[in-house]
Structures are given as structure tokens and as C-alpha cells.
Image (spheres, rainbow, N blue to C red):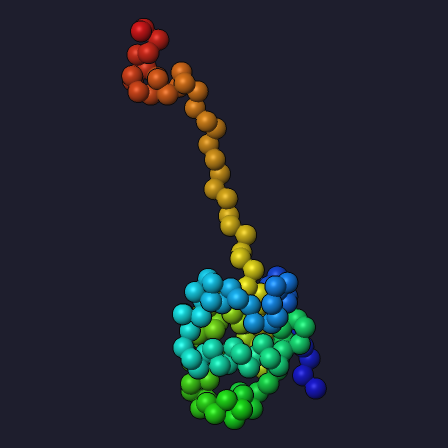
Length: 130
């Protein structure tokens, strides 16, 4: 039996509170528009057969047969899903990824300037003489 392990442990899929395994953010966030019909069929298959952590180890041949998809189209579809950050893949294991937004990196803010510093910049250092 194939040993399962998380490919991306930081993106473990969780069931959304408002729906089930098919998250409405696929539509709301326009993710569905980034993928071909074949890629979306593969995604639906993977979310259907994956375990509670989003893991599945169906072989390419088995998926190809079940989806009536040739192996080249399957590979292209998998690559689309990887690019869309919907799945991770390390043969023979798929992981359906969380749609949780990544935490944005906050830019470092400079200290705010005082009114005096702003006046000094605007007058080329001459505001003290005013």
C-alpha cells in the first residue's frame, strides 16, 4: 500500500463552513475561469476521492479511465491545477490544497514625518527662516 504524506502541510484542505468540499470561492474568486473543463473535471474527481486531508493516490491510468481522458490531457490538466494552486502532486500522490488566502507580506512602514520635517523638505530647509 502506498504511504500517504502531506506534500504541502501548510495548505491542508478544510471543509468550508458554509458549503461542502466544493468551495464557492472557486466561482466568487474567478478561479474556475482559469482552468479548462478537463482540469476542472480532474479537480472534481480529486476532491471527491480525497481523504479528509485532501490526499489521494489514484494512478494516472485509473484517473484516465474513469474520466475518459487520455494521459497527455490528464498531465496538462494536472499542470493547470498546479499552476492555479489547487493541487500539489508528487507521484503517485495528489493533495487537494486549501483555498485559504495566503497571508500577505506587509511592507515595512517608514516613521511618519512631522509637519516640521515636511515643511523642511518642501522649502529645501528654509522653513526655519520663515
